[in-house]
Image 1 (cartoon, rainbow, N blue to C red):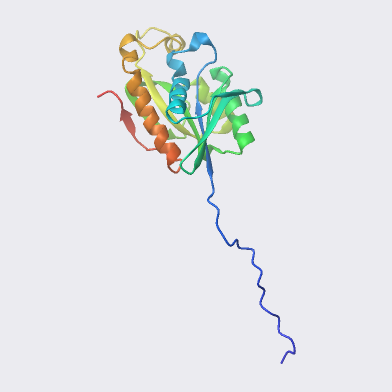
Image 2: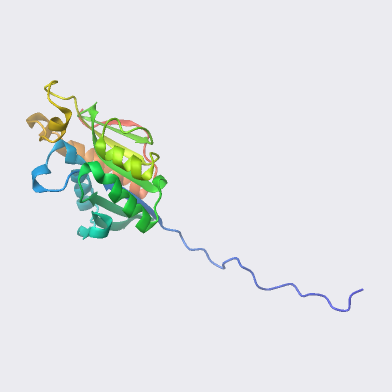
Length: 213
């Protein structure tokens, strides 16, 4: 029989309390910088983020040259939400998204990109995770720099009319008068989607939404 017995340790590596972990989500709106591109179809990603930031009382946008973006952040529910608008041209958007992800240590599973899509009719918004670029140069750049498994909110701006117009000319033009009358509805529905994403678990509703009844 042993003369000495080891006393049980009173120390433990387990914490005596738990701290709620804050999830950081990144939402990027795609567009082109400069006054000449404001209110064009290709810049609807910027417009949607501006509206969301205003509705949710985000602070003023700050220009971050090292991140090639303007940034604002705010806590919504238990999540920290970072909104970003690249300050470089659409075709190079992936450089900005990659820089932001590296700086804040955010991966694609917590990244959402909002962008226009010519193959979806105006009046529809579709969500998806992953996939190809569908010819969108901004998404093509993000895939090139970050991979393809990020979430997307795809804003319909089609169909292209007149049919013979070049796609690049169509997306860089302003919305038609009829479409402009429904932009408010588009912003309302987009705000609803981003709110669900931001206040929830960072997962998108897997559905197509029609914002024109």
